[in-house]
Image (cartoon, helix red, strand yellow):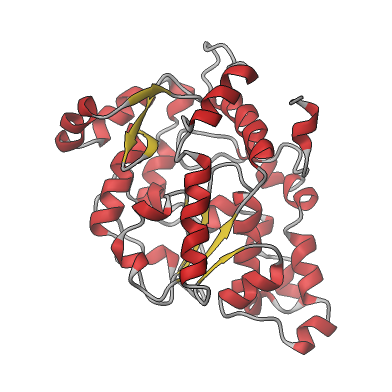
Length: 317
């Protein structure tokens, strides 16, 4: 099973945008005339990571290229009842949840000692194995999604799209969603560090005080933070059988329909998966030290900083 064999992901991988200072050209080449005409009418704020702006659309904030992807997703993505969707605010443990979900859903493919030594998570970053839905639609209005289902137990996707902006095909289907919420103070600090790593080398780092004010005002990608959280929280109350807030690996396996059997519990399968997907293990894998994200040339290492709960006390009064 190799999700990297996608024409869309390969095209994004070939566009080493941040390294070659071609981001603006990439955006202009991949947004439609419709969006170009729409942007001047939308509220606008300076972005965090790059010189691009954030635009407010349907009460949430997006860079132009993500807004184009959102429009394409809303119009063209067709969810399947068997789809499994991971939803998060940016910098809320997305990488870990992707690894955990992938390992749980596909564990039956790797349940013997020889296959465990070749587990995809040992040689692929979680963002490759569980791609963002938005990335597929960033440069293609009708992308080929067959790579998501090849030899897989189910199509496993992730998204930062707010609940209100989800395509109707997801809202009206029986697909399962898991939403991971994080302490907003830890989210802010993590996003601040991440944004500074993503900035071109010729741009000065953003100040934490500035980031704090913008985060609290909601001026952050896919923000405001609390509106994003509350949308999925209400969705989980209305449809608890298909939408849940994460608080344990048991809950992930249950909502996705891949519960651990008594035999698996006795054999320590759950503990093996938690160890495989731990921050310490993932951050020390060679692929996550040297590989790059198939968009903008982001290094995988930037997705692994400290992985600690409560790190905000080291930065905020």
